[in-house]
Image (tube, rainbow, N blue to C red; front, side, top):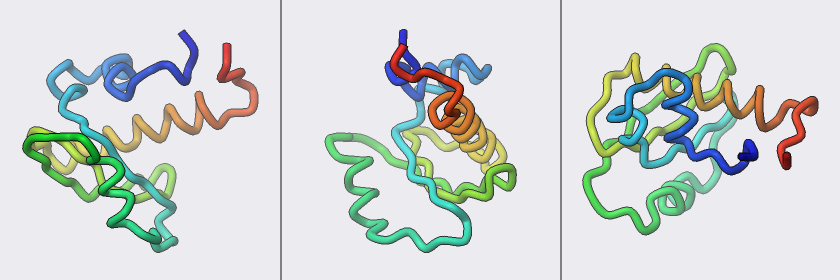
Length: 106
């Protein structure tokens, strides 16, 4: 399986989150903490497009990567857990997807 074929649910499960927590993630938007995200409403609509059901939005901050964002869940999660999920997502993106040493198409 290529790195690009993994779902975020798989990434979270592989990082040690239980199935209920991993499956509760609907989607997310992140940006560098010193930037203002243009057209945030448009991006939120894109993330939630086609989703039907309860949505809980969490403001999240990653001091490790200096990013902030919004995570969307179908179950309420604590701020601490939400921030850990963001760090896990960013760890995966920066180490596995954006790392030039990895061939993302293998």
